Length: 299
Image (tube, rainbow, N blue to C red):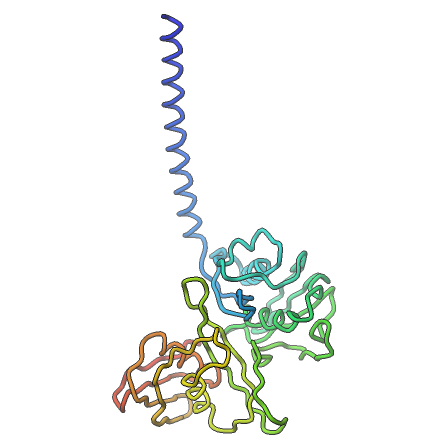
């Protein structure tokens, strides 16, 4: 009897201790998650999606990181077979070759010098140019205008496995997801479009650089491309029935007059595609000459 009472006492004590321990751990986990959320912020990166386009997504990095550490962290997330890959949304995949190391990041005003280990050039022929595009678009923004890529201490002069020469300073002028719609090499116009693509249950943003012989004003090309059926069915423009009635380009302001109302997604595609191609302070959208909105460009 005494043994049974002793056993029951020990059993009850153990159960109570386990419950208290579990509750405490839940509180600690919740507290740590809260700290983690407060100590991180979203940063934009460009990497391959499941359709093999270099697409825009977001990851969490340390809020209090230096600029150099943020750049390094984003690039490390993009290295294949890296435990940081888990930070990528499920529809995206890393593009930098396995075992690539980011040895150093140096920021000089609006220029960033990135020093990679020699593994960076262990990229497939098919992905080599896309890798350069992903690095450029991930690092450059309104403050960082260009980057220099070094491999094993030497400036990278060519796209790996090709004879395509790279400029010393890489900028978004290099292009992304390039499409060539040209009949000759004369009067080539470059237009950067923004499309959507289905990424799991969400839309992700995909910039596409088009090379064309169309010499019209870029604004006209943008609206024709967004309205026309896209040859690649995985790209979505969403601009259904929207036509450009007229427009005005006045120094740092563009005004477009449309034939029908548009929703937020259509506004985003239109304004993003316009700002890809023009240095602006403001975009004014009219619908049948009635003001829809005035978008101020953040710089």
